[in-house]
Length: 236
Image 1 (cartoon, rainbow, N blue to C red):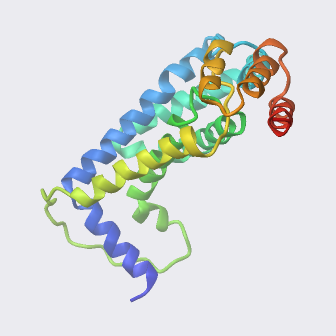
Image 2 (image 1 turned 180 degrees about the horizontal axis):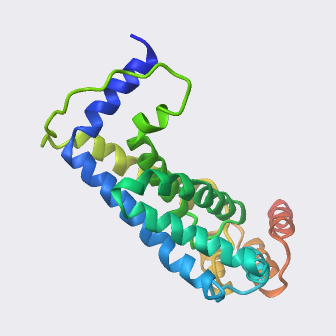
């Protein structure tokens, strides 16, 4: 059996389950809820967070806030994607519009180690991918592949897909653990006080405090603060 045929069969089985359908609806509304307030704030011209300009994400958001109509455009795009996701007929278009925006936010959050969206944005990317995959049959129709014949209507299954939801929970747990405990040895956190809290568990408290001061007191770029931190670690 060809890979495309296997994907078609798997997709049909998944889409025919009522519980997985409910999860699709949940993902759509959760994604919409994530963009409606942030998009509205940009449209009315307010700064999105109260982060200090010394924070790496604060640098970015302050500059973004002063980009004029581009800042407003991002807000309009976010709200448009969110509103499209709320309706079944336009959910696919909403997911297509939503994806590049949330992917950019995810990469930015990881790049500057921003606690505010370090975990939520990767989870939103995964939810967005799930919503896109739900309409795999419609996306496939625009590609130059052989299309399967339409299938007769089948009633939705009430079988609870325990393995599916175990996989969802395991994936969420893995994302949280990797991004908060494994990937980064130190993070700027949102304030100097929050940053210094992690120094209590640090192998080198002084190096950690140097990093926090570089970020929050002196406003140094993240790369420079990390260089100073690792240099202080090597002097132990």
